[in-house]
Image (cartoon, rainbow, N blue to C red; front, top):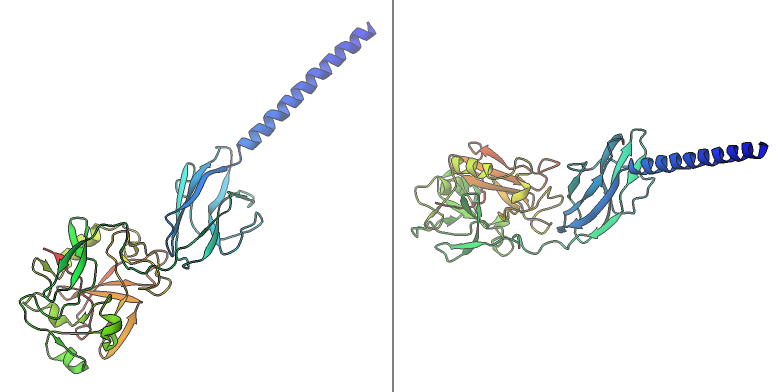
Length: 342
């Protein structure tokens, strides 16, 4: 009887032990499943100053997220590293795709995704590394197919469709209106600015360095002339053309998608430049009264109706925006021209 009782206690103990282990196993399994896991992480579309970091994160409903984001660095990112939330993980509970921007050409970077618990503890994805490309030697987007157009001087320009419009993808370099009337090259400031004469100049009056690819700078009397400086079938854009143009661009970073990437044609940081439209804007600089300024810092393109379009190296962080201004106070300046197909 005593033995049976002991046997019974033993069986009960085994059952309790089994249930305890089962509960512990279930508890551990449940705990493991409540921790977010990073999967399918990869780096793609590397340029001289951008890269795309993407992946998938599984996040059980039980896990309380504090913050989340992506950190990239010139150095290894340890599990103990704190860091600013430099970019969000888009569509966080399923997939994320982060554009890493404003990088230095030909440089190795490390990148990790993270989440934090409500107590601030970091949970990390795998550390990946990549090296940016050398700075681009061409202003164009090599993944785009360009057309072409020729001016009266025989200069041939690449062209690119953006929405329903077709734009020159290069700055104008012509010295004549398309009816053959010459346009003067004027260096003396008073002649360039004040006498109503159509005129052009080279940045810094240097044809060797600045005619190609930056093109010529023209005064407003070229723009407001009854003669057309653009090739036949093309024209200087109007304000209405500009508004249509802008409507074909993304709401965010609508300047960055127009700018050539890298630092050969723009100074750093060339904020958010992707040139995904193929427009290939470059920092041609301007002539302001008697001063040449902002080469590789600024592009200003004449628009009819006394306006001009503006792009800059700096842009408006964290993206780069296209802008337009009235030129009534800039009648004496020299800006670039991009022609638009009729």
